[in-house]
Amino acid sequence: MKAQRLNLLPDTIGICKGDSVFLDIKSPSISKNASYQWTIPNKGIIQHASSYLAKQQGNYSIRVLSGNSVFTDSCYVKFYSKPRLFLNDTVICNSSSAIIDTKNPSYKYNWSNDETGTKVRIETAGKYWVKINNKGCSAIDTFNVSFFQSSSANFGNDITFCMSDENKALSIKPSADTKVLWSNGSISYSIAPTKKGIYWVKTENKTCGVRVDSANVILKACDCEMIIPNSFTPNEDDRNDYFFPVLQCEYSHFTMTISDRWGNVVFVGNSVNSKWDGRFKGNLCPDDIYVYEIEAIEKLSEKKVPKKGKISLFR
Image (cartoon, rainbow, N blue to C red; front, top):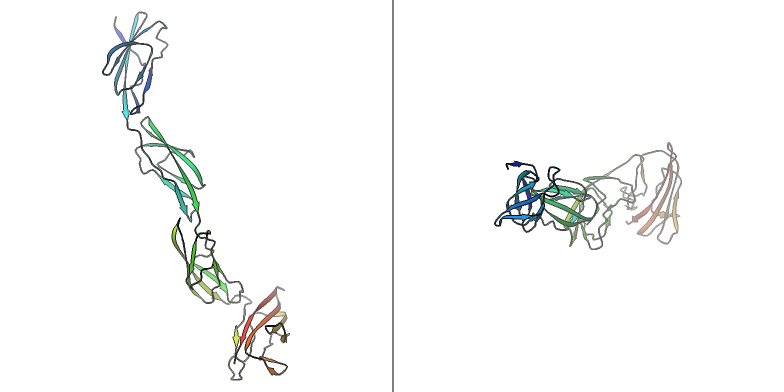
């Protein structure tokens, strides 16, 4: 009886070393009462059922006697090394995304976020996994991704302030375990720049190490700017003898009040041309720090412009 070749098994099956695979014969051409003869690597010919558990690498052939027909086929079981991938838990500093790269294009990948490439972008903290496939031999590796902000600066390369701004500030929002040092020696989370130039801040923590951010501070006179000095010397030498703001716009209302450190009013001016000569009721005021308050309304926009600050008087 001549044997017929029938597609009963795949040509090749790949499995991991140490694993096993069932070779199962199913075909509508084979009767229920068929007999099976397997040829197994290192064991020769054995009688068996329609399936066989293959545990060795090599060629497996099958001879099936079904009624008056004889069918044959074969399959090579190949062992592959189990893929090894050790993705460490990752902490990403000062970024909103992480790139996890396997650096091995010889394997196939299926990530827990449905990506299939050798690397994946992750934007949410959490636990992830990747299934690695080496020609039928697979393994799964899990890893955690977390994001950490060591500092969050509110400035870019250049930042511009109006000279009259009372709340000029460079600030960061570091974590609780972060050390902070500014270029002016401050260790606080915020500084007020007093002059133009480059300011830098260094942050340091155990998780992300050292980071340095910098900004170029520009001070300029803005539209309707009030340029207010912080000191004057009323000693009648015709230099800096009066305290007054330099105005760049017209105002429909203007009042300037100056008080001493105890809140006593020593000067009130109701004109944009008002100037304080450092006297109260004709008498010289002592060298000290005084407080000015300005209430003004811009003529064109009707915008209220309140100003408050300190002025040093010394002769």
